[in-house]
Structures are given as structure tokens and as C-alpha cells.
Image (cartoon, rainbow, N blue to C red; front, side):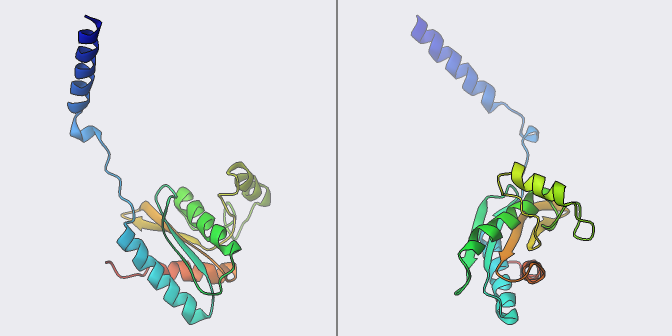
Length: 163
């Protein structure tokens, strides 16, 4: 008898899940692998033009890695830095850098956020969000040059042709 009750309860649970109205689900836009590779290639071209050996990371809207490139000669420490610049930008929805802004940095706030996030937030320029209709769908992070060069390379990636 208990076996029959278990099966009935499970069937009821499955039935309840199957009748959730479709309008209750969210559609999440995120950068695709193909788009991420296009962003990478455009950023690499800009870095080569500038003579910068960089690491370039593309993440989705949650900061998960989608695509990555380490140019020949790029420093190994730039791997994590590029990734964390991209994560910072994706999570804040604005270019990475000191908080509240590069023009008006608050060192205590910036370092406090960095410490609280286990170093995943970097208060250094070089990460830019990828936006569609004003919503963050990903971000590009670059490390290898000066913060200004990294930002310029990341911004160039945003001009990538749509695949």
C-alpha cells in the first residue's frame, strides 16, 4: 500500500511541475560561444595592432567563462586578472575599475569589495559589459597592457561583427 502511495505522490508531483504556466519562466539572454569567439578575435586584432600581448576572457551574464585566449608571450598572471575583470564587469553591469568611478575612486570601498568577493572583483580597468537592449549578456576582460590599454582592447571587442 505504501508503494502505491509513493507512486501516486510522485505522479502528482510530476504532474504539478508539468502544468507550470510558460509565462512564469524567464528567458535569459547570454553571449553565445560563436559571439564570444568573435569578441575574442576582434580584441586580439586590436591587441596585436597595439603591440600588447594579452589574455582575453569572455564570460556570460553570471560571470561564467565562455571563451578565453592567451596570446603568445602574455604573462601567466594575466589569465586570472583578465577573467576577474570580466566577472567584475558582468556582475556590476559597467566597465571594471575603481568604485564608484575611475574619476572619483574610493580605495576603501574598492578594496573592501575585492576582499569580500575573494578577489573576483578587481578595481582595475580592462573589463567591459556586453549589452543587448540595455541588459548584460556577458562581458570581456583583458589583461596584459596598462589598464588604459586593456580597456581599449576590451572596448574594441564590442565592435566585433555579429556572427
